[in-house]
Image 1 (cartoon, one colour):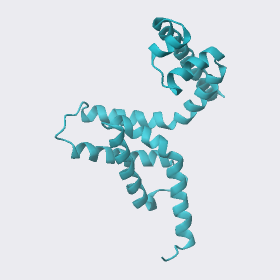
Image 2: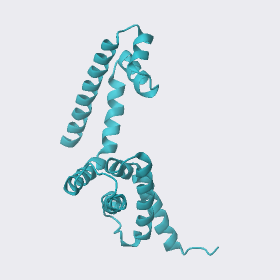
Image 3: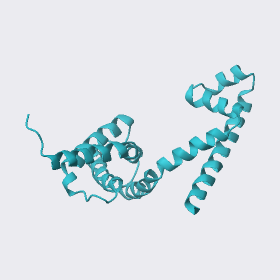
Length: 180
């Protein structure tokens, strides 16, 4: 197998680093626009192939994620065009607006994850345990109620209070980050 020249190797490394660093956000952009996680995986894979073949058109120093989302948008349109016989729940115009909004959302996803992690640390031990049981251990409300000796209604209300508090905390942290 022939060795790639050093410049080509650098360009390959650049692509791999940019794609790896943005793959989760790119998937988050694609997923709401297609029917299933499996379809999102397929569109992501096809998008990655196209990004590689067109990487010579990417201008270093510009926003890779924005460029990748434009390519992904075209792949999502291809996905829908190929499945035109299947019923669609979104009009083209609504899908276009959604795609534009999703670009802005995925650009802030890492900030939101950091804020969530910090806010989770601010919860009381009891609240963290409840979140852990519900989301990490994937227990249903009935099971949590039985395990904690609370009614299902009390567990729902407690989770709602935690959700509301986390939402406010995240928004506060993001607002203070934007103001700072």
